[in-house]
Image 1 (cartoon, rainbow, N blue to C red):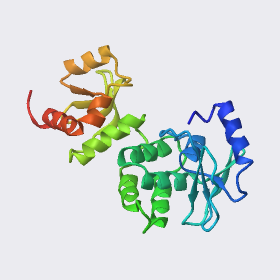
Image 2 (cartoon, one colour):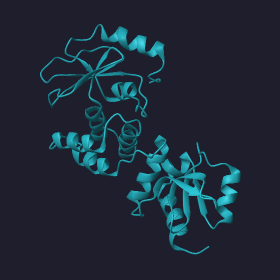
Image 3 (cartoon, rainbow, N blue to C red):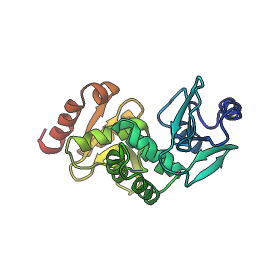
Image 4 (cartoon, helix red, strand yellow):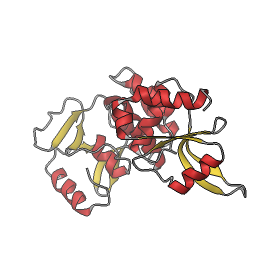
Length: 243
């Protein structure tokens, strides 16, 4: 799904929405995109209908039947959407753990909802499939995460039973000014963990950190998705064992 700022995509959504049942509202990845936290792409238009309403069979439309009533429906750029907290929690219940946290982080980062609103919403889902995952991840959600893979990386470290790093850690120079940011940092141990695919930390910043005793560890998609255990062991070694 493209950006909310893509007028062609908005026109497409509006055209499809005109042919949907009157009770349908946009939800899941589609609504998340409109609210600004659509970090998990999809080619389908996701809608939800009240319980008991027949679900339309239409190519490119993923229809969901609601279990809970529509407590919050909003107009977003001329399109009816379930509220942002509801959309975020629905996704957190139904996506895989890594992407579920990325959605919650992004929802907080863009200000679509607050941590309290997410906690209240997940309580409304008590007893539904996936709510245990959503409840745990809502507690871990952090607005400081800048990208999807950074959220994934943080959850891999959490699941590996490592201490929680500080997202987007600001490191100060000798004058007290911010010299650079580290994706995930351990201040006392001076260990930095960085997603190498899209990092703001350049080579001069890396060299500067090294001269001040920081041990920097960089990880790619292959590390995150093919060898997460090795990733955890690498960070554990940097935290607990001398060079």
